[in-house]
Length: 179
Image (cartoon, rainbow, N blue to C red; front, top):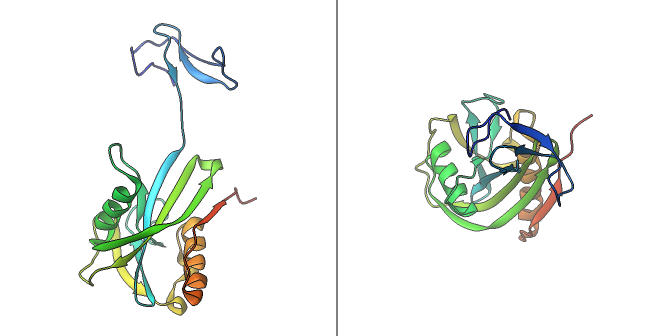
């Protein structure tokens, strides 16, 4: 950080504020402490019967790979509202939301994922501006090697295991950097 977003000063340092335990960007001019916090990603695992809906990404990162509809939560919305918005933006999907389904921390990229399960209310869906195509897949049809992100892979694995049991508990975990 080179300039303070509060006062515009270039008197920003990186040091530990009094009473804190880790370095932060500090403005020597106005005293603002600039916290940098993880980004929250919200999404949905849309299902219809024994199939799930995936979107082929039209944007980077991982353009051309398949994913569940998800994206950054916006200010002023709940996580559920954000997940529904992302489903509409990426797949023009109408969804009846179920419960929160998975929560994953990805500390090496400062992200937290909140994924819901949601039932498609109809088959009137299609690619939005961030998707090349949208399709329904049964477990055996999932293009597993082409899944864009580890969090989506894990969420899909949980879903197909849970659907055999007819029970959908909340899944939590940490996705670590691959070595």
